[in-house]
Length: 194
Image 1 (tube, rainbow, N blue to C red):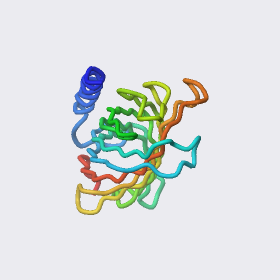
Image 2 (image 1 turned 180 degrees about the vertical axis):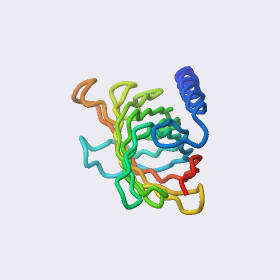
Image 3 (image 1 turned 90 degrees about the vertical axis):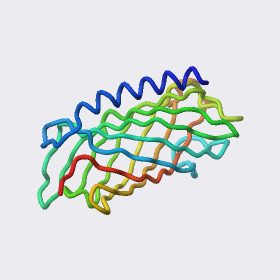
Image 4 (image 1 turned 90 degrees about the horizontal axis):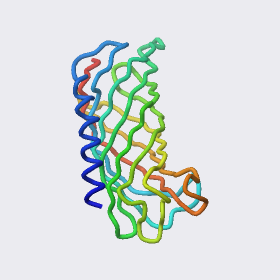
């Protein structure tokens, strides 16, 4: 597990270093390092797929980069795109394993001032080990789907909620199971839109 964690840390550090090159004020049509998030949460009932066999919790550090595709909708609202990457730990069945996610395209609809935004995206996840007690995710690669709502509450600080679903989509067979998580997040936005 330590070897896998080192590889995951190096990979995410490399992604973050590339993303850090985009730090700075940006206009629509430009890449910009958007936010840093500390997230934590627990599993819940599964509206998607088979029921989980263990209770899970996750904690991670996530970062978002605004992508250049953005459109003003009028009335102070925008339709935008971003990329999300995270590195953290997933615990279930008395086992803790590393998890890294990359959501290359996250669609966002929200107010330009950031008071409220709703987003949805999909991508992939890598687990340092796919077994958590009696629950087997099937293999190290998982698809990830996320849906959430965020709000800036005080200048660059904000809060959010994200529903996150891990699944192998039967890539490793019919017996593997994923998990649905409810994540609460504390957010710091780098790109000021006020």
